[in-house]
Image 1: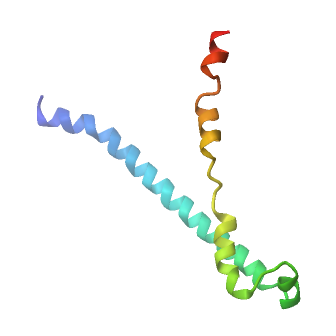
Image 2 (image 1 turned 120 degrees about the horizontal axis):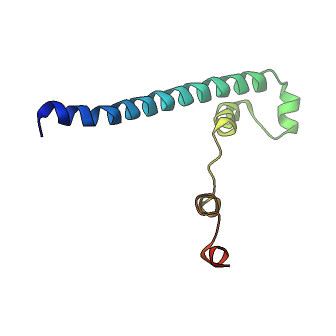
Length: 92
């Protein structure tokens, strides 16, 4: 196969990988922005309110990151989504 043909076949995959990486960077930037907004909102709360909800000011940055982290489905949920019908249901 000529070299130009090989390059033409690989090119779409490079574009897909590039768009995936750009999407990853955008999601990461959005998460950082959301975490900063959450931390800023929590910083505005008074010490007595933070104490009532069981937080210290030192915990705010970690909490803001944890709250803005996208939920990851459990293994059982991933299986049910990827295979909505079990083998038994598919045969009936």
